[in-house]
Image 1: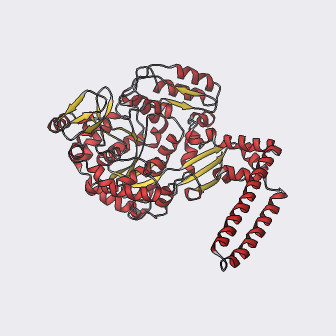
Image 2: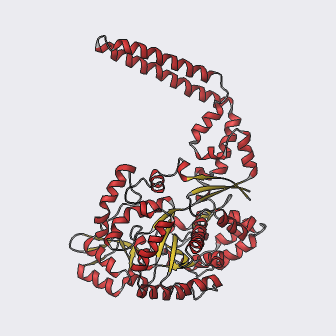
Length: 528
């Protein structure tokens, strides 16, 4: 494996403008939440002042209990002990409980979080920073997480959905036997198969399975794993949840930011609801208010305001944050400095700044996670032979293809020259037409538009003709594009980590860790 190039997010067409503007500090009011040593220094002080010893004691009890069934590493032991100290902080990422981790960016997020913690421990040795992985155990969209893909296979597990996914038990193991058939002859295939069998043993919940998987991969790095589906942690949120039920403060306080982001960037990632909580029973259902009662959507359950507040007081574990409330929950129960997330996550975190301020809860520094692409040497050579740079595959590929097919075309320059000459002629006529009758000037403009359109039609026909003529080259271009972008999207959003781990084992994890630069948000391209 060797790194070929790094491309900053600012140079990638497909990165949302909102993310680019956030990274380059073009969004007023968000400058202090970009990653740099000065902002981290401020974050240490803000979090220390807001995270009291009582909260820390609850967190330590929960984490120690949640790790008690695991064989934890020395670094994990050290990190668990350190969290009792009020000079210890966390950096966090989170993700859904995708089957066997789902797409490989699950791995990249965690590795970047670990490396960031190591970076901060080196940069600020008088303080301690611990990496944390937040399991999204309360999500209820099982269809989103019940599968993963390799280069040649699709794997899926079955279960009854609708409730908190972390509580779903593994009921079938057909995907395991299929996986075994694919990887049994790989260099590290046996290790992967044993890992899958250990994590997804029948009877394990998806929460237990994900914890085992993440533990096996990252224990030696000191990563701690937290499950928010815990009554003790929810108890810390009773005041916030009560405020949400009675006053809908999240909805109200985010309206200004949502309007600002919508005006400039088209739409926000997640629209706040009036009540941003679910009710957990055998299923997970939204809570809505009709002004008189609080109704549990799709369930024959309703409460008066007094009744639902009593339910919250007695059973806080039955209340579950939605996508926008979850960041608040996380930051309330962790001494957290930084959240590392995908672009979509960062975009909805940005909506919440004013809500955090209304709760007097420090808003964290946000880092859009790094992306990685692993590409075979032979594919890079093919790109070179076609006159392309790897960066070309992250531009508009229709434009790239057009450029390649028309590169040495003799007609295109003639069309361009003729079009330029025609424009010059019409400019001269238009200049004289201005002093003549108005309708004649309009006629000149309309005729210019008509004739220039014919040049565009000729270019399109020329491209179509070259596609037919150079069909073999076009096919090679398209196949190479699909090799780099399987399914026409980024590799990291399609393939499971097993595709790479099967050949390189934990050396691959370490390589990804070493190549990441925590001070930059970029695409790292590696040849294999």
